[in-house]
Image (cartoon, rainbow, N blue to C red; front, top):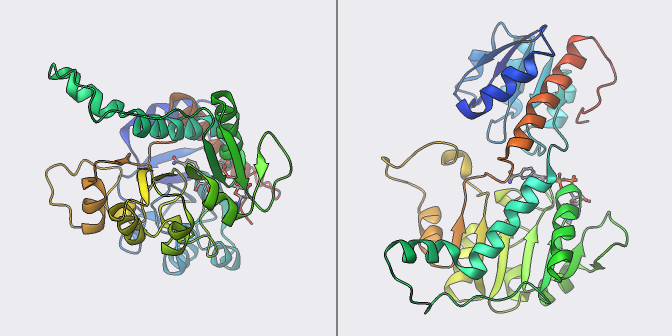
Length: 327
Ligand code: NAI
């Protein structure tokens, strides 16, 4: 099976090389381009494509894939909001994904954002390097006894709740699909009103798009911390700026950003960033942004490569029931 892997990065190649030892029938070609309407021609001559979070699989791209006889789209990530699933089904293109590779990787990164923001370790690091041991401006707060609202308690949300339980935080959960656990179930309104920290772990869908907007900020506690390691468009970024300026939002930690496909996963230090909303966001002293690295651990990359090739191999073997198909 000939597979073209889009948006490839050097750091993932060793993990795929190792996983390929188990699947000699898969012939993997790497391209650095992202998949979109301009680059879809690169798929010609392949049986399958492998894509990541910021590749675009809309109606136009999927129609071209069907024209080229592509049988399968293998996502090497968990989220599939960038794929028009209905259109893929209509065109007979199977979509497979890596539903869980290391929920702990993302949960731990989420905690890293919370602790960095609350204890200001990023600022302390710079100060100490310049022999500045002044503590003014570094005052933090304990996670112990704080109320943390978790929106979406699936695999990542549950991994995070276990860690938060260890900190002695009071955990509120809003998720229409989970039952009782080591947390208090809450309505979204109650969670927004009572939480000192709100953290997002639900998928991006039409109904969750901009779920954190002016209206949601108006319900939150003054000085709340908001963390998003899920998908950028869960938050209305312009509303975030307004909430930061009014100090409703006391801390913001983002690993994902609404327009990240134009920015993330590349060194742009020599470019002039054109996204004024992003530039404004990172200018606040109480905002910390990482470039979609929640998944980026050794353990997660091993799993991503192994499960992606397992998924492709199921198709190559002609299986009709695919373990990780998105329907
Ligand atoms: P999951 O499918 O296990 O859990 C999602 C949970 O969200 C489910 O329990 C579901 O019932 C709940 N949910 C759905 N709609 C909701 C709503 N309107 N309000 C509240 N809860 C809702 O997914 P998992 O593995 O925990 O991943 C969550 C998200 O994290 C993914 O959708 C993906 O976007 C993101 N992610 C980010 C990564 C990163 O590197 N930053 C890496 C992997 C995933």
